[in-house]
Length: 258
Image (cartoon, rainbow, N blue to C red; front, top):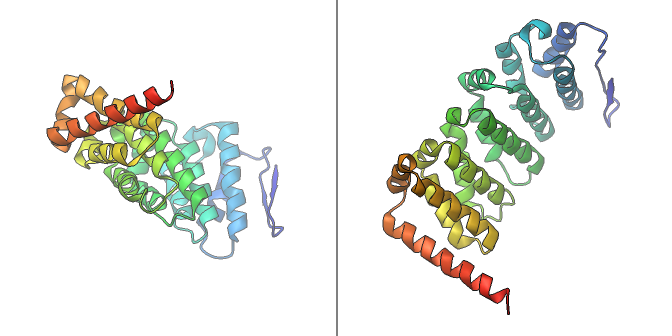
């Protein structure tokens, strides 16, 4: 397999070679600070994913520990080119297959770099999209391990995104809702439930409002999660938001039949 870039730099992946030889070349080129173009690094990061899909995640087959791989991929998230950072995020998403690998990623503090990619300038949509896809993979693998650093970035976008016309705000709110159901503790500790309610009033789309309110009601409906709603949201504020949303949804439903 050969990946060609626009500047004619080439990143080769010969599957006949031993996986450890291929991975060594990939990681060396990704980790080099000088002498390797960004387009070539991009090609090697794409080859890393192809190699994973071909040989699997076994450290014995890859010839490197997961920690060594994560340390090298972490450098891609510090690259000055947003395309390389996006490719690094994508590579991490393919690497994180289970809770053990996710724990290693968090132990090496990669979550702070992921949070940085989310809360970066709005024009970097490709990078931010890859960051959010990685975040959803982390929730799928083990939501109980989800870091507060990334939660803070999601909530920051959720709180200010509409005013700043951030196109990622709805995606961030959707992820916060998903996380609130699977790990209400981390969301409540960062006042993410207040963010959900704030968006109920700000958003004029009935289906989105219904999903937001349903998330809060789901938490209220279970005794073991009800405490997190009460600790994050004042009861008066909660009832006001739910009542206002109910009236709005009722009005929308009535107008659909006239």
